[in-house]
Amino acid sequence: MDAQLFTTLQDEIWDLLKEIELHEFDYNEAEEMRGRDPTWGFYAFVTDYSADVLEKIPRAMDHLIEVTRRNIRAQSTSAYTDDACHRFKLSVVEDEGTLSGASDDRIREEFRAQLRTLQQLNENDWIRAPARNYACLVLDKPTVSTLADLSFPENIRQDWELFHPKMIRVVDAWWKRPAANVSSYRGVGHCPITSLARFYMLVTSAANSGAMEDLCPLESSL
View 1 (cartoon, rainbow, N blue to C red):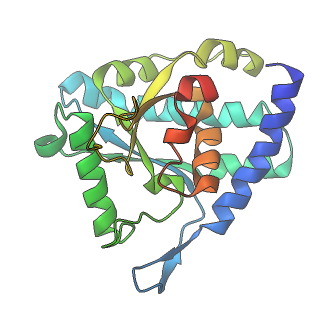
View 2: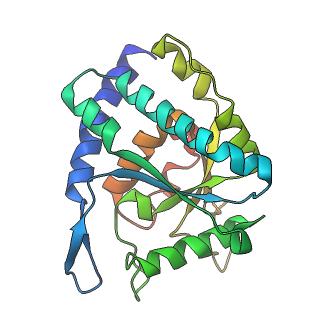
Protein backbone atom coordinates (compact mmCIF):
# COMPACT_ATOMS: atom_id res chain seq x y z
CA MET A 1 0.00 0.00 0.00
CA ASP A 2 1.67 3.26 -1.10
CA ALA A 3 2.03 6.27 1.22
CA GLN A 4 -0.54 8.43 -0.56
CA LEU A 5 -3.21 5.72 -0.43
CA PHE A 6 -2.35 5.03 3.22
CA THR A 7 -2.94 8.70 4.15
CA THR A 8 -6.21 8.79 2.20
CA LEU A 9 -7.54 5.66 3.86
CA GLN A 10 -6.48 6.78 7.32
CA ASP A 11 -8.51 9.96 6.89
CA GLU A 12 -11.44 7.90 5.60
CA ILE A 13 -11.60 5.86 8.80
CA TRP A 14 -12.26 9.10 10.67
CA ASP A 15 -14.84 10.02 8.02
CA LEU A 16 -16.42 6.58 8.46
CA LEU A 17 -16.91 7.13 12.18
CA LYS A 18 -18.46 10.54 11.56
CA GLU A 19 -20.96 8.96 9.16
CA ILE A 20 -21.76 6.19 11.66
CA GLU A 21 -22.48 8.72 14.40
CA LEU A 22 -24.58 10.84 12.04
CA HIS A 23 -26.90 7.91 11.28
CA GLU A 24 -26.79 5.88 14.50
CA PHE A 25 -30.25 6.93 15.69
CA ASP A 26 -33.07 4.87 14.19
CA TYR A 27 -36.30 6.61 13.15
CA ASN A 28 -39.58 5.20 11.87
CA GLU A 29 -41.66 6.59 9.00
CA ALA A 30 -43.26 9.12 11.36
CA GLU A 31 -39.77 10.43 12.21
CA GLU A 32 -40.08 9.06 15.73
CA MET A 33 -36.84 7.80 17.23
CA ARG A 34 -37.01 4.05 17.86
CA GLY A 35 -33.55 3.41 19.19
CA ARG A 36 -29.83 3.68 18.60
CA ASP A 37 -27.49 1.43 16.65
CA PRO A 38 -23.83 2.49 16.93
CA THR A 39 -22.61 -0.26 14.59
CA TRP A 40 -21.83 -0.26 10.90
CA GLY A 41 -21.81 -3.10 8.40
CA PHE A 42 -24.01 -4.97 5.94
CA TYR A 43 -26.71 -7.58 5.57
CA ALA A 44 -25.34 -10.69 3.85
CA PHE A 45 -27.88 -12.82 1.94
CA VAL A 46 -27.17 -16.56 1.64
CA THR A 47 -28.10 -18.13 -1.72
CA ASP A 48 -26.72 -21.67 -1.30
CA TYR A 49 -28.06 -24.03 1.36
CA SER A 50 -25.99 -27.15 0.80
CA ALA A 51 -24.62 -28.70 3.98
CA ASP A 52 -21.00 -27.83 3.25
CA VAL A 53 -21.83 -24.16 2.60
CA LEU A 54 -23.92 -23.80 5.77
CA GLU A 55 -21.09 -25.36 7.75
CA LYS A 56 -18.58 -22.86 6.33
CA ILE A 57 -20.66 -19.68 6.77
CA PRO A 58 -19.63 -18.91 10.40
CA ARG A 59 -15.94 -19.22 9.52
CA ALA A 60 -16.43 -17.25 6.30
CA MET A 61 -18.08 -14.39 8.21
CA ASP A 62 -15.40 -14.44 10.90
CA HIS A 63 -12.77 -14.16 8.18
CA LEU A 64 -14.55 -11.32 6.36
CA ILE A 65 -14.83 -9.42 9.64
CA GLU A 66 -11.15 -10.10 10.33
CA VAL A 67 -10.10 -8.91 6.85
CA THR A 68 -11.99 -5.67 7.40
CA ARG A 69 -10.62 -5.08 10.88
CA ARG A 70 -7.05 -5.87 9.82
CA ASN A 71 -7.36 -3.50 6.88
CA ILE A 72 -8.55 -0.72 9.20
CA ARG A 73 -5.78 -1.40 11.72
CA ALA A 74 -3.16 -1.41 8.95
CA GLN A 75 -4.07 2.21 8.28
CA SER A 76 -3.73 3.63 11.80
CA THR A 77 -3.10 2.76 15.44
CA SER A 78 -5.15 5.63 16.85
CA ALA A 79 -8.03 5.18 19.28
CA TYR A 80 -10.70 5.85 16.66
CA THR A 81 -9.35 2.95 14.60
CA ASP A 82 -10.18 0.50 17.39
CA ASP A 83 -13.61 2.11 17.67
CA ALA A 84 -14.28 1.54 13.96
CA CYS A 85 -13.20 -2.10 14.28
CA HIS A 86 -15.39 -2.81 17.30
CA ARG A 87 -18.47 -1.27 15.68
CA PHE A 88 -18.29 -3.42 12.53
CA LYS A 89 -20.80 -6.26 12.19
CA LEU A 90 -22.37 -8.42 9.49
CA SER A 91 -25.96 -9.65 9.69
CA VAL A 92 -26.47 -12.94 7.85
CA VAL A 93 -29.90 -13.42 6.24
CA GLU A 94 -30.96 -17.03 5.60
CA ASP A 95 -34.23 -18.11 3.98
CA GLU A 96 -33.89 -21.24 1.91
CA GLY A 97 -37.43 -21.01 0.55
CA THR A 98 -36.91 -17.63 -1.09
CA LEU A 99 -33.15 -17.23 -1.43
CA SER A 100 -31.87 -20.63 -2.57
CA GLY A 101 -30.39 -20.07 -6.02
CA ALA A 102 -31.89 -16.56 -6.08
CA SER A 103 -31.04 -14.16 -8.88
CA ASP A 104 -29.73 -10.69 -8.12
CA ASP A 105 -33.19 -9.26 -8.83
CA ARG A 106 -34.79 -11.68 -6.39
CA ILE A 107 -32.22 -10.84 -3.74
CA ARG A 108 -33.00 -7.17 -4.25
CA GLU A 109 -36.73 -7.84 -3.83
CA GLU A 110 -36.14 -9.70 -0.57
CA PHE A 111 -33.75 -7.02 0.65
CA ARG A 112 -36.29 -4.29 -0.05
CA ALA A 113 -39.03 -6.33 1.66
CA GLN A 114 -36.82 -6.56 4.73
CA LEU A 115 -36.23 -2.80 4.64
CA ARG A 116 -39.99 -2.19 4.52
CA THR A 117 -40.48 -4.42 7.55
CA LEU A 118 -37.79 -2.46 9.38
CA GLN A 119 -39.42 0.83 8.26
CA GLN A 120 -36.28 1.85 6.39
CA LEU A 121 -38.05 1.97 3.00
CA ASN A 122 -41.10 4.23 2.91
CA GLU A 123 -44.18 4.41 0.70
CA ASN A 124 -42.45 6.96 -1.53
CA ASP A 125 -39.73 4.41 -2.26
CA TRP A 126 -37.13 6.35 -0.31
CA ILE A 127 -34.49 4.34 1.55
CA ARG A 128 -32.99 5.71 4.72
CA ALA A 129 -29.22 5.94 5.07
CA PRO A 130 -26.80 4.43 6.08
CA ALA A 131 -25.20 2.11 3.53
CA ARG A 132 -26.46 -0.95 5.42
CA ASN A 133 -29.84 -0.17 3.85
CA TYR A 134 -28.49 0.79 0.42
CA ALA A 135 -26.57 -2.34 -0.53
CA CYS A 136 -26.35 -5.95 0.61
CA LEU A 137 -23.69 -8.63 0.26
CA VAL A 138 -24.32 -11.94 -1.50
CA LEU A 139 -23.04 -15.22 -0.05
CA ASP A 140 -23.05 -17.79 -2.83
CA LYS A 141 -21.05 -21.01 -2.72
CA PRO A 142 -17.84 -19.72 -4.37
CA THR A 143 -17.77 -16.65 -2.12
CA VAL A 144 -18.36 -18.62 1.07
CA SER A 145 -15.65 -21.12 0.12
CA THR A 146 -13.17 -18.36 -0.73
CA LEU A 147 -13.77 -16.54 2.54
CA ALA A 148 -13.73 -19.69 4.68
CA ASP A 149 -10.40 -20.76 3.17
CA LEU A 150 -8.55 -17.48 3.79
CA SER A 151 -5.24 -17.74 5.59
CA PHE A 152 -3.88 -14.64 7.28
CA PRO A 153 -0.20 -13.70 7.08
CA GLU A 154 1.70 -12.66 10.20
CA ASN A 155 2.59 -9.35 8.56
CA ILE A 156 -0.64 -7.36 8.26
CA ARG A 157 0.93 -5.25 5.51
CA GLN A 158 0.69 -8.25 3.18
CA ASP A 159 -3.10 -8.36 3.42
CA TRP A 160 -3.69 -5.82 0.65
CA GLU A 161 -1.74 -7.78 -1.94
CA LEU A 162 -3.27 -11.10 -0.89
CA PHE A 163 -6.90 -10.11 -0.35
CA HIS A 164 -7.67 -7.00 -2.42
CA PRO A 165 -8.13 -9.03 -5.65
CA LYS A 166 -10.81 -11.16 -3.94
CA MET A 167 -14.34 -9.85 -4.50
CA ILE A 168 -17.78 -10.14 -2.94
CA ARG A 169 -20.95 -9.42 -4.89
CA VAL A 170 -23.02 -6.43 -3.81
CA VAL A 171 -26.65 -5.75 -4.76
CA ASP A 172 -27.95 -2.17 -4.95
CA ALA A 173 -31.33 -1.80 -3.19
CA TRP A 174 -32.13 1.40 -5.08
CA TRP A 175 -31.76 0.07 -8.62
CA LYS A 176 -34.79 -0.48 -10.83
CA ARG A 177 -34.81 -1.91 -14.33
CA PRO A 178 -34.96 1.06 -16.74
CA ALA A 179 -37.49 1.33 -19.56
CA ALA A 180 -34.59 1.72 -21.99
CA ASN A 181 -31.06 0.37 -21.74
CA VAL A 182 -29.42 3.77 -21.30
CA SER A 183 -26.73 2.40 -19.00
CA SER A 184 -24.76 -0.81 -18.63
CA TYR A 185 -25.27 -0.65 -14.87
CA ARG A 186 -27.58 -3.40 -13.60
CA GLY A 187 -27.63 -2.74 -9.89
CA VAL A 188 -24.83 -5.15 -9.04
CA GLY A 189 -21.15 -4.66 -8.29
CA HIS A 190 -18.14 -6.59 -7.04
CA CYS A 191 -16.41 -5.07 -4.03
CA PRO A 192 -12.87 -6.02 -2.97
CA ILE A 193 -13.14 -7.70 0.43
CA THR A 194 -10.54 -5.26 1.75
CA SER A 195 -12.72 -2.26 0.86
CA LEU A 196 -15.96 -2.72 2.80
CA ALA A 197 -15.14 0.19 5.13
CA ARG A 198 -14.40 2.56 2.26
CA PHE A 199 -17.48 1.41 0.33
CA TYR A 200 -19.71 1.92 3.39
CA MET A 201 -18.33 5.40 4.06
CA LEU A 202 -18.64 6.60 0.45
CA VAL A 203 -22.17 5.24 -0.05
CA THR A 204 -23.40 6.57 3.30
CA SER A 205 -21.93 10.02 2.75
CA ALA A 206 -23.50 10.25 -0.73
CA ALA A 207 -26.92 9.25 0.69
CA ASN A 208 -28.78 9.16 -2.62
CA SER A 209 -30.27 6.65 -5.03
CA GLY A 210 -27.19 6.70 -7.27
CA ALA A 211 -24.64 6.28 -4.49
CA MET A 212 -23.52 2.79 -5.51
CA GLU A 213 -23.90 3.32 -9.25
CA ASP A 214 -21.57 6.33 -9.08
CA LEU A 215 -18.83 4.08 -7.68
CA CYS A 216 -19.15 1.31 -10.25
CA PRO A 217 -17.17 -0.56 -11.30
CA LEU A 218 -16.35 -1.04 -7.63
CA GLU A 219 -13.23 -3.08 -8.33
CA SER A 220 -11.72 0.00 -10.00
CA SER A 221 -12.93 2.76 -7.68
CA LEU A 222 -12.22 0.98 -4.39
